[in-house]
Image (tube, rainbow, N blue to C red):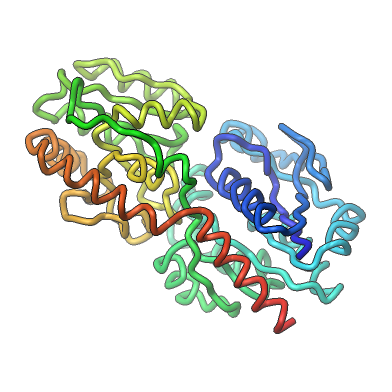
Length: 370
């Protein structure tokens, strides 16, 4: 099958949506398919390269998020879609909906992957409220993915949300998946030395890492705990100020995937604070590598569905409950070791390879019906 993947910023190394797309592209090729990419040329050269689309009012905000939006050039998109047997659109932005539109005209099947909730956008723009979130969901339904025959939903929770907004496409639940390198990652046998907490994600409003900073002030053994914020982003200076208020200075830096796996070997807990999350790939990779998760629970957090016990959850935004959960795991090392192994076994259900196989089966179904 000739698969065309359409995404704004394919070569981005810090965005979960882009990283997931890179992994699926690799697996599709490994399965014997021919894969070509339509993307902005920042950071690499796609088979079909597009210039960056500069949105004047939002230029600085988008740049701070480390993301690039592609300019949907008609000639390039028509050539790309004309080559393909299947068109996979990965974003709700212009390049994707234009590609799906041309696919419809050329009688080529297309499907979309739902990577972004409106809250992921509106939180960054400081307009996270009912009106704008509803507006964007209806925009996604009626404009972004209108010409897609199917939608790939990373979780059952995402599927339920799309059903709530009456998306007309057939909905397939297929996880973004975990790469084998995280599942095979070695881990220390004991707990502590020192007890380490990891928080992974961009320093941005939607990730709500400030909740962990506040919780650490309340944790009983906070002076003995090593705290690592793995990431980068627009709130770096604000987080550096919060870091100065803690009794033990946290480590704040960006890690490559290889470096992050080394950090995970020595990590006891991974804390996931985001209250709007389509799946939470970073958290999944961490628990696959042996880090026991403590996850924010909210209506739009699919990551919360990966909590295996009540001690793996805390109410989103509640720093006191988060501190209590951290204290619990610190005080119960034997239970933490058992939970670590339980999560490592659980993670094997969500490999990227299994997800890619499901996605290819979805494409075959779409192709037959087209």
